[in-house]
Image (cartoon, rainbow, N blue to C red; front, side, top):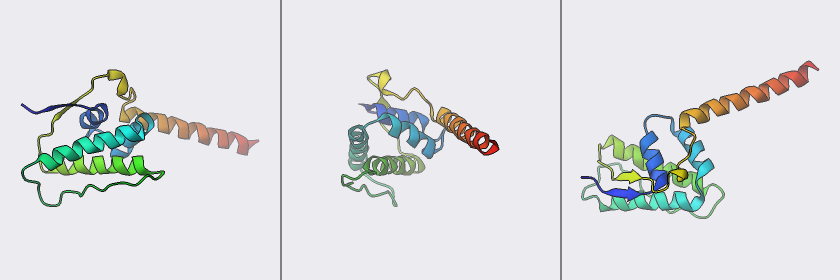
Length: 133
């Protein structure tokens, strides 16, 4: 039986990975989780990869990110890169679970796309209205 690990961010990513575009998942994750939560999730995933007896060739190297404005996004990209490599190698991941369901984004990545589209239509509508005046 796979190991059970409590981490809401990894639970969210694992349950949506492959169903939605990474960019849409990234918007939901970055809008919901703090830099510390993203860093903790990356560390947990790195610990799992490090514990593997054999790593398939071409596995992405985990980089230590410095404190920068875009650190959270870069670390999330690292998480997505590992999920992609693990999925391609058909590695069985631990079962990531949420201890607090309120720490899972209530917006699915698919809804992020709809919200983004609605916001774009509203901006365009405002621009058309101002141009027609």
